[in-house]
Length: 257
Image (cartoon, rainbow, N blue to C red; front, side):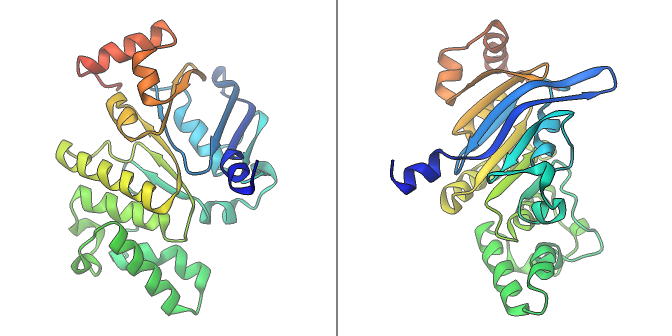
């Protein structure tokens, strides 16, 4: 195996026998998952199945009760969490932009912390991401409240990538936008993934979205993975009655709530 093949096959994210409970409710049980560099992993399942808990463990927002989570070969439990989060993009459904900052200031927030006095380097990072997300430069001096939902999501994704993150975590980031905007943002995410080569973990309640975006799809239920495979495989060869029903519900237009 050459160095390139080894790098691609080495997991950039790894869950090793992870369990997590909230009170008497177990949300993850003996959970195993590896994500390779450059994958676009989509995760689908009903509410309460452990999707968001799993995602938050990657950047240390939630800690497992047992087992371990590894990012870039390092156990998250023994990592500087602040440094880890600065180096991992994180996008949520309701964006979480700083309302008192302009679009430019929001995107530049983390690069400013990292570059400190090197304002030119920060300015270049902002310009690059504005171009990547195809944002109108005229929006840069506006505040989040002056933007549409789709524009806010574009800014949120740009801010998540602003520090040069090679891992992007997305927790139902498109759930609050209308259908037309959602499709456009899906196209942007596919393009960004292809152009930047980032590793993405994308949580969604929309099975069609999971199949459309993912190079690999994980179906979860009750804290475990019930199927893991390529989109075509998931649809054509459901591995359980649960996945079969999910495929049929998708065809009928159903989405998990």
